[in-house]
Length: 182
Image (tube, rainbow, N blue to C red; front, top):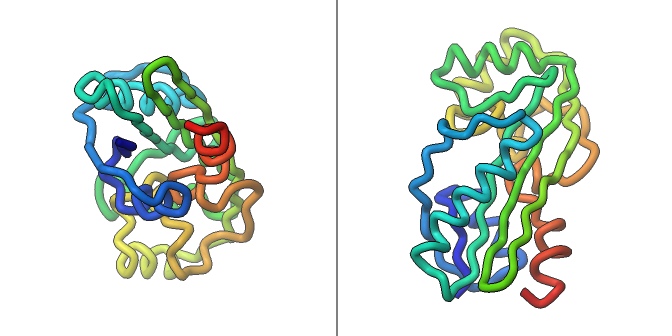
């Protein structure tokens, strides 16, 4: 059985593009316990999540993923509230940030852990745009307080994987996990 160790509806939707049948089992890892540099955080968190599920399902395949947004060298997680979301968007306005997704795939005798980076370039945002976006799109469950899939004019362009910015680097997972024959 192939297990996605994530409760994210976006990850579930994206995994369906490359793995037609899988089960979702959410890990119970406390992500706040990891203290590593921002560039290593997604891979370490994905590894912790994958192993937490794999310990209970050692005969199965487990895939876990974690995504952070890095702006000026500092990670942006999910906003605490609407004011935090607005502050994040103000900070991102007109800037380049990096979206890092780390994923870990485990099965008996095999482990793959990789990190994928995508550069995201924001448009200059007005206060009105920020207020409206937070009010209409409710981005509190999204790292960096935005969803690239939202129909909104926040992003000028990206360099890299669109799916990675959504939180699941399907192209890289397909190339390194699925194609080699799991």
